[in-house]
Every structure is written in structure tokens, then in C-alpha cells.
Length: 277
View 1 (spheres, one colour):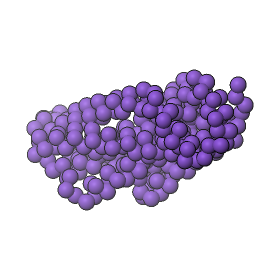
View 2: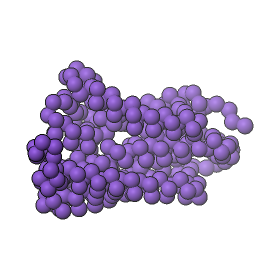
View 3: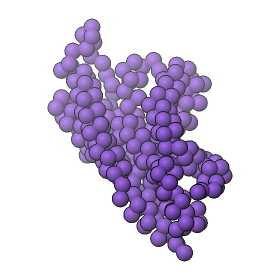
View 4: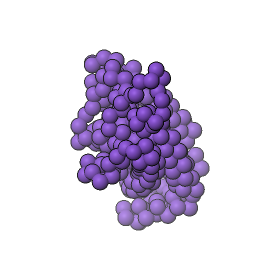
């Protein structure tokens, strides 16, 4: 009979036999490094006046360093979500879930092992995401004579909270994989919601106080609240006409835990209990 720690060890062994973890890590590094470096150069150049804005007006984005560093989570959170979902839904897709349940008939232990591994890998992706965003952002800021604020205590607090957010997103991903065991369906669902649905909802909600107050409870907004910064703040700093509401960081983290627990519990009561062949 396999115990909980043995189940976690077996899950890590299984993950390291696949290409999923390092392919996602590689794409994350390249994507976030290029995005943060490119947009950081644009925003820092505009704010410093080195890049001439339309009409000769020099826009002010406020404190640039935190939003640029938060690219790690406000853009990169899709990677731990996908990882968590695929380590679960992928087993149904490749029919490895049957030998997994035969080796350990205690399905709660199997689920616990997946959550533990996804949280650890989520934090690992957080380290890589911060490395990419901080490198690209800090180089851009220094190039235009702006302070990258790497010596500020608040910046390091942001880094710690970003790691926590990425770890929690791994938990959310496992819950989604349990709830939607179809690999193709869960990928489409995650990409559609994170890249289109929620950003559009948050943008639309920012034009009035009541809708902004409601939008702060969305998953991505909760994550941004936990981290304490978001790339969406750059647009609001420049325009100054949008309404932005934030939870405090503790409640942002709590909301992510609630989302992860909710989808996991619903999935356990439905698809996770079904028979396998």
C-alpha cells in the first residue's frame, strides 16, 4: 500500500519522465524575457523622454519597476495553471490514470500528490518567471536612467508574494484538470479565459466603480492583489480615467485558495470518482 509521501515521490518521478515541465519552462523564459524587455524598453523610453510620444507629450506611468516585475505573474501565471491541469488531464488522455489508480487505489492520495507537485513546480516556474521579468525590466530601466528599485524591501516582498501566487496557480490548475479531464478542453478553457475573457472583463469593468468592485474578485485580479502590482496598472497610470479596485494581498491569496479548492472539490465529486477502464 502506497503512503502519501510515497505517492508524492512517485508523482515527481512520473513528471520528470515527461517533456512537459521543461518545455513549459523554456517557453516561459523566452516569452516573458522578450515581453518584459520589449515593453520595458518602450515604457521606460517614453517616461524618460528618450522615445518621443505622439503630440510631444511625455506620459507618466508612475513607478515602473513593480508593474514590469509583475509580468512574472500577471502574464506568466498561465504556465503553472497549464502545468497543473495537464499533469491531471494528461493522465486521462494517455490512459495512464488506470495504472496510477491500480498502484494506489486511494484516489485522495493521488490527488494530494498532484497538488503537492503542482505547487512545487508552480513556485519553480515563479522563480524562472521572476528571473526573466526582472532581468528584462531592470535592464530596460537602467538603460534609460530609471531606478530598478532592486534594493527596496518592498520589491523583495513583491518577489516573495509572486512566488506564492505562482504556487497557488499550480493548485488551481490541478483542480481544473480534475474538473475537466479532457486535455484539449482544459487547454482551450484555460487559454480562452486567461488570455481573452478575464482581461476583457477587467477592462470593461474599469469604467465604473460598481463593476470595478466586482471585477477585483476575478482570479487574475486576486492574483494581482496578492502580488501587489499588475501590468494593467501601467495603462491606468497613463490614462488616469479608469477605475481600478484591488483586494489587499491577504484576501487576494485567500481568493486564489478558494478558487483552487472550489474547482478541486467539484471535480472530486464528479469526474474524479468515475470508473476507469
